[in-house]
Length: 537
Ligand SMILES: Nc1ncnc2c1ncn2[C@@H]1O[C@H](COP(=O)(O)OP(=O)(O)OP(=O)(O)O)[C@@H](O)[C@H]1O
Ligand SMILES: [Mg+2]
Image 1: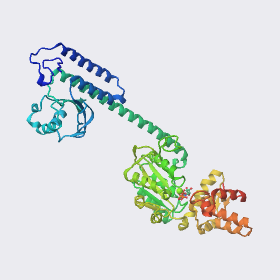
Image 2 (image 1 turned 45 degrees about the horizontal axis):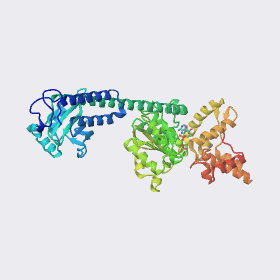
Image 3 (image 1 turned 90 degrees about the vertical axis):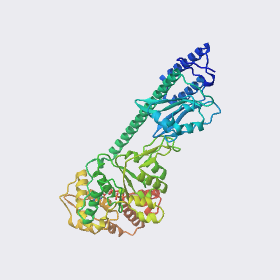
Image 4 (image 1 turned 135 degrees about the vertical axis):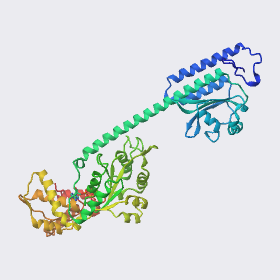
């Protein structure tokens, strides 16, 4: 077959060059066909749907190869110092080319392309001497003739488009080269446009995610009015609490993980809020999750989020607390209760800042400061195999122990004062003084439920006491007073109330009264109703 596409030099397989230099009529027809093919491809590229770009490029490569009687065409795109084959077409029976071409494989060609120069040879010997390494490889791979056009957009080389003849040598007329150059420009434009389109979509998705996060954050903010109103105040003058506070001051401005330990009701959550409020992240809301409050599968979705349809019943997409806490602090309460498989996932976020939503392969990166709390002995949990050793070490970088109230009775008067002012104010009750002997009694009590129990006791006293002097009885005194009745029902009532107070009136959960009493929560609730036990307002 002979092809002459304008210009003076005929593009013909070199062995069959037209000796007479005449242009047979058939050439004109073929030239026209090639021209109209190029116009056709251009028209197709102008309004192409970004999703169809790959297919359109491959079609074009095939049609050009067929029209010019070539064997293959390859589109390389730059990736660092490599050229990677992203699209190709070859006549049947051709071995595929390697996918990645390193700079070292084709040093001369690489430099040529990177300088925006084309590479054209009709036979291997046309290549200059400097191209010795390239020649050796090309010889091995087989192309006899080749024309490679650089892909240049905005002054930057994106890759190259190569056309090759594997079976015969052929010459390339300036007109053909000119058209191939046009094709390279078109492909380049279409790739650049798709790249922009992808960036635009990514930006839109990001905006969408940001909006969802803001909405969730807003909801959270409304729920967490307490932490929104100024800094949480940790009351106490004892050496023990002052030591804790100085640790808070030290760790707050760093991004270190903090582990807060202490009995129930000592103020661990308050300490976590204080750390956040004194940190560089304070302008964003602290996000919280109680790891014991939900079954394992739900905790996983709460922490890491899930895609719609991640499991049966996952009807909508859920953004996890880790995403929500991006740029802020995540408080993981009762971290000891986290199931083992989630402990592994948590460790990964702490180490790499990475995780995936349930039901999604996409890795999400976050910048989150974690504060964990537990009222259990984590070291014991590690020894029992219930808590991962590596996670423990990761969390315990900066441990803060909040001392129990019985170890700092000197804090009781000031705590009582603060609580009376706060709760009394809300109830519209004003007291001129607090009975001194009450304070002494309160200081003698052991407070298994710590400050939370103290709050409950003070609250009940405010309701019951007359003005102007507030009398507060510690729980034990109330206990002995009623224990004089030996009726089974009274003893039962008393016992349940005591346990409830110890559990800060929580019925359910691991630390709840039902667990402590060894009863199902519903049974306990029925008995409470029967015995007329109600949580004090
Ligand atoms: N030093 C303190 N000053 C003022 N209020 C305090 C102090 N310590 C605790 N409280 C109050 O006591 C109650 C219990 O505190 P918090 O919820 O922080 O305890 P916790 O250690 O997280 O308890 P749990 O282990 O049951 O989760 C809260 O109402 C808190 O405001
Ligand atoms: Mg707590």
